Length: 219
Image 1 (tube, rainbow, N blue to C red):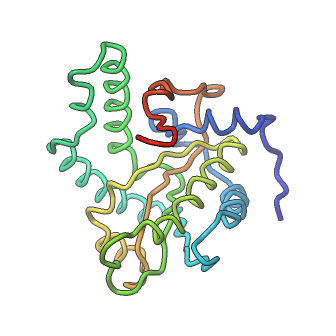
Image 2: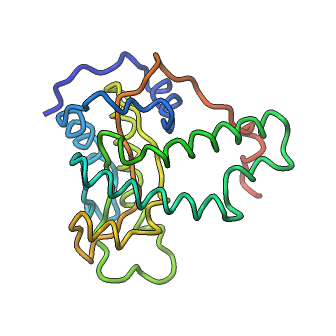
């Protein structure tokens, strides 16, 4: 049953202001589990291949378990920070404006790595796949999970909660699975740290112009 009050946001505003929240996650304000459940009820309306609905949702609220996930996440972030893919290097060669954006993203990502274990709720979207991931094209597999994870973020935003999309924890997927008792045939897709956010609201992010990425009829 969906029963809580939601923010008065029109669909376009809700979609364009659901941001990855890192520095503005409120680490001290408890999150009612009912809000998480309501957001997951919305997520379950997302499409999945052949309507299989093979998803599972690991919701972690126990302080010691969150701290454990946070330690693995910090280790994964440290490895990422020393890799060529690090966001702090992504702005090199771009305009000063884009470089400034990347610096802000880097700073917020570093902050999240430091506080992950203290974020009140960890939501890990999972899917049943068997012992091994399928070879070849996996679009159908992850396409049956990730839209639901995004729906959770939108529903949480409508209820005054912020979240961040991250997959860095997957470097230690087996260790986190052992920590949380996730079965071997269930794989994790994304970690969504969730909390109330500080400040009033969010605005749409700067993006590259549509015409730079739009291809009509032919590339």
